[in-house]
Length: 197
Length: 94
Image 1 (cartoon, rainbow over the protein chains, first blue to last red):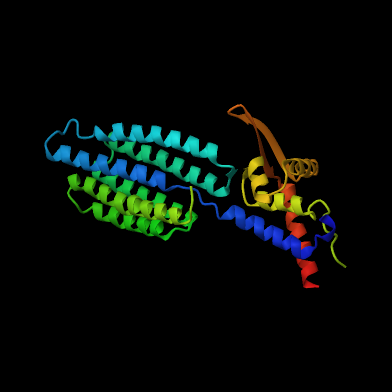
Image 2: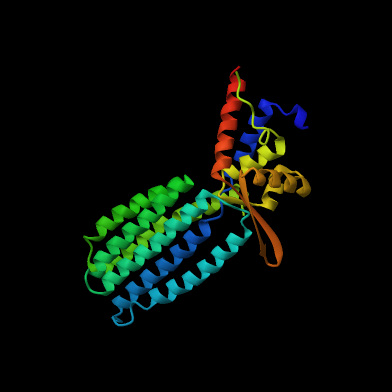
């Protein structure tokens, strides 16, 4: 076979192999949906508790749900990493993006908890950060709904400055729906159509 | 005058392997076998040749008690692949 291998064959082999490895977008919708639902539930529960007058414990849903989400994500990420037979630039970029996201999120929460900025201001920053995460990952995945969700999140972030503080929680919920849940379900149905894992 | 084609890359299976590795950070042995359709013995031989030339790195470890071989392309391998593609383009133009 090697004797008949010519330049045309080389080109064919190269394009074939590169095509094979590039069309393997992994199932990421799981994380968008998991975090989308957790944040949605946490922000709405927080809002309801405040409305009912439980000011001291209104924040409780956050640590519980976020801690649970962290554990589930960690296990799911570990399992997916074990199943994956290749590691692409795409995986590495996503890992850096989302770990940077989490660190920035903690810094914002820390600054808010220390009393240096109001919870409303921190919600504005957090919504803007959600927008950044979706916008960039949409660009990497070349998936428009995520990019659009990111842009809408930024608009919601600015709008949040002008609502009464307690409603900024509902703005967080809204941004999660447009930036994570809607694109997450669209991504899931797209992966299904492609016959993907 | 045409450039000499790198004999190490001008072979179907080795070129397949390098082309697969060029687009990923690292790939498992099983993935290479699956994508190229070649036998494991043959792939193993070609990997050793590419490794000895410094075009790829091979890391052997274990996962769940099974041996796991992972390969990735080196900067030298990328350079070799690029000049191979450039050489091929010259041939096509002729």
